[in-house]
Image 1 (spheres, rainbow, N blue to C red):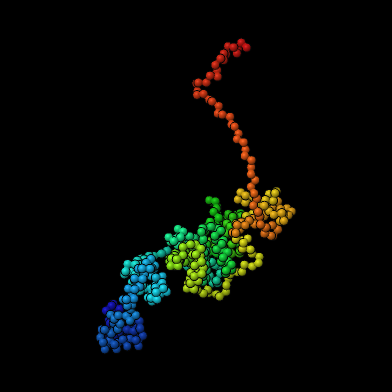
Image 2 (cartoon, rainbow, N blue to C red):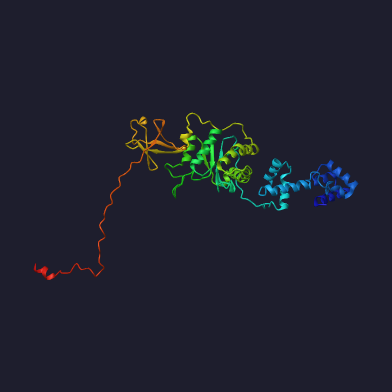
Length: 418
C-alpha cells in the first residue's frame, strides 16, 4: 500500500468516526461527494483493501510476450545495432512486421545492453520565437558536413538544406563543397520548384556576410560591401536575416541532428555509395517520406512564395557578377585573362564604361551590354619572344682592411715639387 492509499484510508477513518463530514472529506481527497460515497461503501464492505486499485499486482493484458520481445532484440542486434529505439521501432514494423512500442523497445534494448540512456541535464534557456504564419514566409538555411555515406563513399559530404519555418517542409541537396557556387545551385533548384521565399534565415558565414576589416562597425556611414550570395538574394527580392547564435535557427539545427541519425542509416539500408545516388535517393524517397511525416499545416493557408517572373533570369542572377571596364581593344579582364566582346555588340561609348560581367554556373562568360546578355570569348594568349639573358658585371674585389696597395708609388714630395 502506497502513501496515497494510506492518506485516503485516514480520511475515510475520520469520516467513519464522525470527525469529518462527507463534503469536507471529498474536498480533501479532490473528488466529488458522489465518488466519496461510493468509495466509503467499498470501504465498509472490504475494509482497508477498498483504497487499493483492483488491478494492482496483476499482470497487464497488454504486456508483450517473451517470444516477441526476444525476436525484437535479436533483430536489432543483427541489423540495427547502432539504431536508436525510435528508428529501430520503425524498421521492425516496416521491414519485419513486428509491432512493438518505442518505449518498450527502449526498455528491452537497455536491459540487453544495446542502448545506453542519456542522462538528463539542464540546458540553457533561450527566448522562444513563434513560427511564421505562412508557407514560404521564411526559410531556415544551413550546411551540415558529415560522413553521410560512412565508409562506402567520400569521408565527408556537405548537405545544404532549407526547412520552412511555418510548416517544417524540408529541401536539400548533397554538394561537394560549402561554396557560393553550390549554395546558388541548391537555391536555384528550390526556387524553380517552389518559387521565391520571402526571407532566408542563415548564419553569419562568409558565404553570406563579407569579412570586414578589424574595427569596422555597422553604424559607420558609407557603402558596405556584399557577397555574391548576398547580391543574388537582393536581386531575387529575398530578405537575408542573419542569426546571432545557432539556437536562433534551432529548427534547422535540430533537423540536422535528426538527419545525421536517420538519413545516414537510410542511405546505408538503401546501399547508396556515391553522391549522385545519394541525391537521387534524397529527392525521390527520403524527402517525400520526411515531409509526409514531419511537415505540419501553417497557421494560414496562403502560400507566400512568389513566382520567378519574366523579368528575372536565374542564370544571370545566380552567377559570379562584377563590374568591368572594357579596354580600348574591347576586351574585358577577368581573373588574369582577356575576354573579347563580339563585334556585333560593340557600340558607341562602350570603351572605359562599366558593364556587368557574369561568370555563370554553366561556365559561360556573359556581359550585359545595352540591356542584352552577350557571350564573351576567350582571347588566345600571345606568345612573347624570349628575352636574351643580360650579362651582369662581376663583383668588384675589395681587399680586407690594411691590405690595399693602391697608395704604392705615391710620394708626397713629388707632388709638392710639381
